[in-house]
Image (cartoon, rainbow, N blue to C red):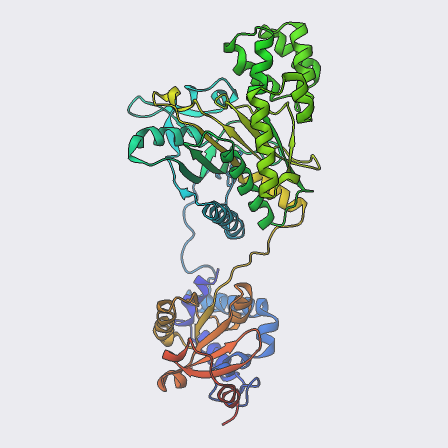
Length: 524
């Protein structure tokens, strides 16, 4: 709206007079007694101008109208005719359902979260990798057997290839490991933070587009790998202020379920289907779970015994049922012993019903949960020793976890642990005259060359500079005035203390002596 009035300032005699009167009304500086100080500029505006900016704007618009009347022989109106109206349908400004925009404040939170993901991974000696968001559809349906197959964003590209937006990262990891073959040394300890897509029903903390933190260990057959992964997640929680009273891990092994099914002569090819059904035990009524198990060919007796064992919450009780020599029990006992040694035993608990919905898990599985029960699973993972052969590679012992970004943010909100992440810029540089903008740009370049962040004020609106400095949490304000610049100096104001002084450009990264700054605040 200000663009049109500005055109009249140079062509309308009446506005020229108004502008002259405006500058003549500027009063002497009152903040500092030094009239040559660059800070004197900010007190020189009349109070009426700063207190009622809308009145000034309306006055300017009135003057524009009068000026237009004079220039057009009594006709009032805009300088240019209005554009021809076209029927344009308004676009929906919301992102697609289930996806998100990241304006600056949300982006700061995302960056903070991702940085914690990365720092924890590096603390544990993991290396970062990444994969294409677009993958071959076959990569995800080859080892399906669960709902992901029905949740793919998939299509045929222009080369008639079936492709899909990745719903998770582990199959992509498996593909890369096969591709690298023997060129990499085992064990591999890799992590990734990547965008994933699933067309699914949305709930709190569940979106169709999300980011996922994965950590995977390839080449270690022992449960020491699972212990290391859970320890890394616990370390992450502690960094964010989350405690064992807020979050826990339910731990079990798929081998428990395999042993139970063998006891009732249930074919191995039903194992995946049974896992998917059991994974929904907390979401569906028990009668519906029984009905679904019966529909895949499990007898009523086997269903009752199966559900009875799956209700066990004690390793010692499980050992009584399955026997001491069972591999699943031995693995779990060792994991709990390692948890004691690593200091996270209070975070984990045995729960035989945890099997995880992904078909490729083969051993230990675990799931992070909110102890108050307000949120869905926070994270989950386990062992997948036979995934690589599904894609034509040689199997390697492997385990990993996935940790979504949406649920953890909801948990941090619940616990009031979200950090205050305001914008922070070290310097704000402002010229006091349009002709000095080049000089201000030079100041900004010098500071940036020294590794300091700078917000260079591009417009000539010095009245707003203090409000802007506050908004970006600037440490200091640097003012470029005519007389100071001629002497090779600039004005500096430390915004936290109010201290202000002049300093040479090449000394800007040094704090001046206190006597120096006191003299320059306003004494001749």
